[in-house]
Amino acid sequence: MVKGNKSKIDNLGRVVIPKSIRNALNVEHNDEINMRVENQSLIITKNNSTCNICPEEKVEVQIKDKFLCKSCVDTIKGF
Ligand SMILES: [Zn+2]
Image (tube, rainbow, N blue to C red; front, side, top):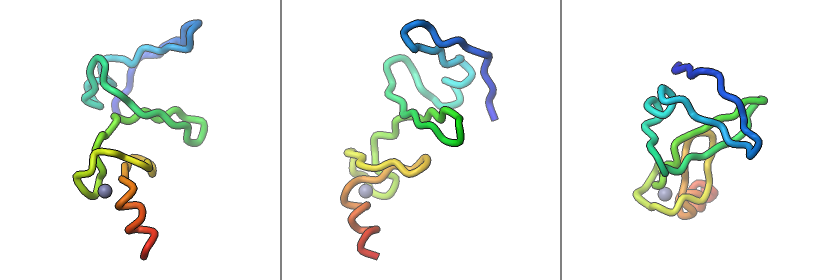
């Protein structure tokens, strides 16, 4: 687990992601990230622009830290 320093949320709701966390996620300036709340925790993940199953780039669904395109979701629904 990588820990960052404490941050404060500014009056516009912004928060600085510590460099140690950015490095651990391999995210840089202008990269997109995903955020979700789970058990009262904010989970930030790197925006994975491709499906985790096939090479499709348009991601439709995120389940935990996995990203799926519509085609793969439909395939799974068929089982
Ligand atoms: Zn897919």
